[in-house]
Image (cartoon, rainbow, N blue to C red; front, top):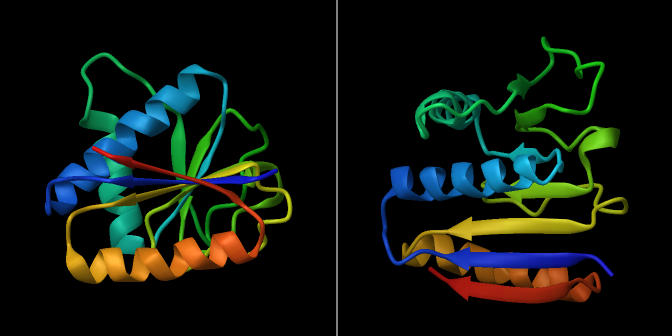
Length: 144
């Protein structure tokens, strides 16, 4: 059964939200999991791309922005960040930092939703929570 995990941060800082996402991405990568990070905009992709290079000294997480111009890497050991649906080999683990419900979740084992303490963002998150429930996902949530 697929799982959707919601992480609700006490901070309202977008930077804290992205930093927490980077920590979870690093943890997934260290466990051999290669994920897709779903965002709303190219600007958001670029912010995460930059932060993944700098958030932790001496760490290396291979990643790239996935868009029309950048083809899917030939190997799976790369974290992809993009605004479109996750490509075939990156559907198992999705980090949803967008305001939308991800498409094409048939191959997905787990979706991680990271929300900050912004009421508008939490309201949209509640809508997605219901969507995951309706699609039979096992639900978990964590207050950070």
